[in-house]
Image (tube, rainbow, N blue to C red; front, side, top):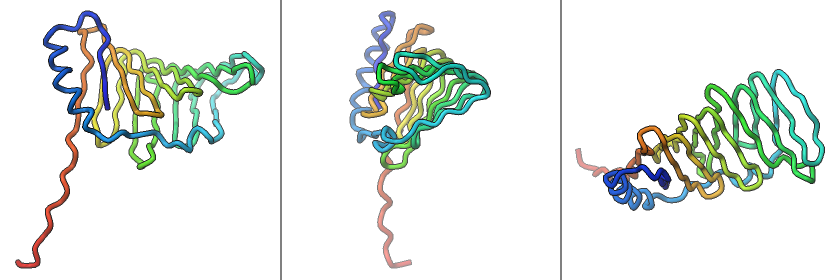
Length: 185
């Protein structure tokens, strides 16, 4: 997991802390979202729907919105679904308290994300979480900030924060292999 604060107000100490933290983050093996998810149908459920599937159109969903595509699941209070010139879903913007996204990687590890708004680019596989954003990769770590961008294809993450000017991250160490047990009591 890599995360880079983009705030210009970040202090020298914050940049130093990041310089120390990022090399450790790069030691992790990349965790890539299930590649088969992008080939699955997108299922959408909500209490209310308004719109249609036409080129360059937008449909609006409200009330307990749940969108799934393979192991990718996103939910919130409302959503706008954007269709491109070929009537394919190109983007989904979900708002909620919070908007939520989760997805398994090819090794069946779970990524969880929450924010006030989730903007998911279905073409590029990029999720932008804004407003009290958090992303957790099970067994790997987590990041918190005002805005987190998560690439579901490469697992690369960037972040920025206006509040205290910091993106907060936790990196979990790799689990050591269990020591072999001897046959003697």
